[in-house]
Image 1 (cartoon, helix red, strand yellow):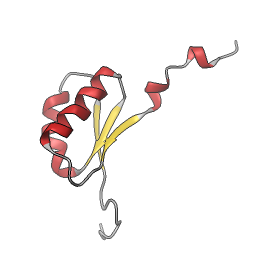
Image 2 (cartoon, one colour):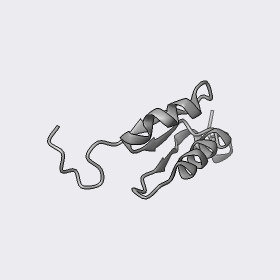
Image 3 (cartoon, rainbow, N blue to C red):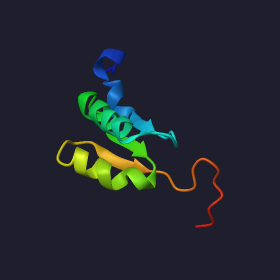
Image 4 (cartoon, rainbow, N blue to C red):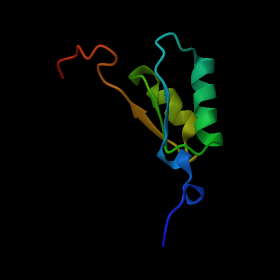
Length: 77
């Protein structure tokens, strides 16, 4: 069996992200909505947004991922 591009849903391989330090609550809500609408496996956000995103995405099939030490990588742990 040959798998073609028509057989693959590219959205299954995309983690949507919102890594703008100036992002607002409205931006986060829109990112979550896009994650749901596009059926992305996860959204990636800053740690301070995790609690809100989890509440928005609860039972929606979209996971929440976060970054540590982004973008500078200056954290030691």
